[in-house]
Image (cartoon, rainbow, N blue to C red; front, side, top):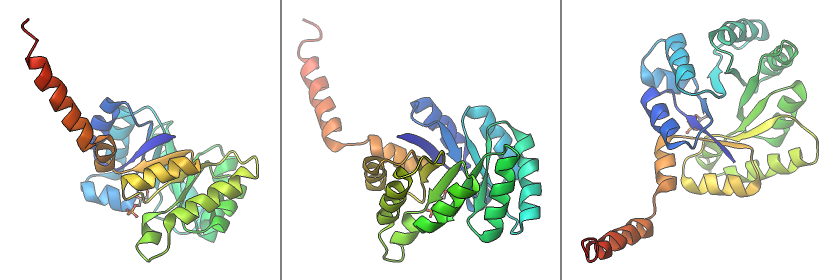
Length: 215
Ligand code: G3P
């Protein structure tokens, strides 16, 4: 399973690239606002850190304006993927952009039907959200299972990105369900790597080594 980093924080991206475990980045207006920086500046910097898909989200709500934004974003770097919310105007924009060869990531997806529509419109990626369904007592992983099951029945080129991932269990479950990608916050990458028995085992190895290292 491919991992993308879900952040606009360039230091987190540098650290994750050094770990060698991510191959792309997703952002959204909230993640950009959290950095308090110029949008184009931060996306350009991210493109210089990682050579992989970088999702940047439009903030327009009409097809014409979304397409205009997307064309400007595509000029920033060849790796830019335009994130489009799954509203009817967004489907029109995805359809138009797919004809123009601009990659899209259909976001804020909460049903299988939204994912199917996005794939049919030519989205490069669909982003079903897990955590925000969990937040309202719906099992977000059920959505992932349903989208994976539906897509497996057809030869869609559209890739599934598990999004709104809130804990390492989500990542493991999404992998077992067969998503193409999970996009995760940096702190989750570190949590995924951590296990107390690994730490205890290493400490014991090093302690025992001390007994013979100078023999
Ligand atoms: O890419 C979508 C993701 O950033 C949303 O995550 O935790 O705000 O639901 P969250």
